[in-house]
Length: 99
Image (tube, rainbow, N blue to C red; front, side, top):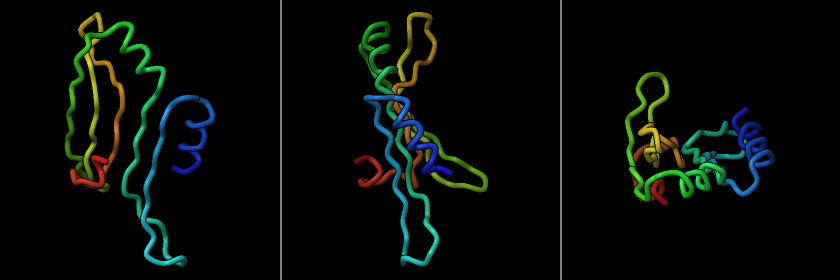
């Protein structure tokens, strides 16, 4: 279902970037989720027009059934509220996930 979600986001949000990475040991084995990245072009336009020119980067660990980290680039808008720019769910902070 995640592939369908990513494809629908790409169709409906032109100019945005949605990337998903999965692993598969062999052709017969099931896929193993690694990371999912979302960047909406409309949010970046809004940030450039209405927010301060400073980005905040943050991340936190996901606990429970699915482990990993949620990384986010955020800013504060004119009402001093959090304004997301891009986010990613990754298996952990490493060179591959930052790239």
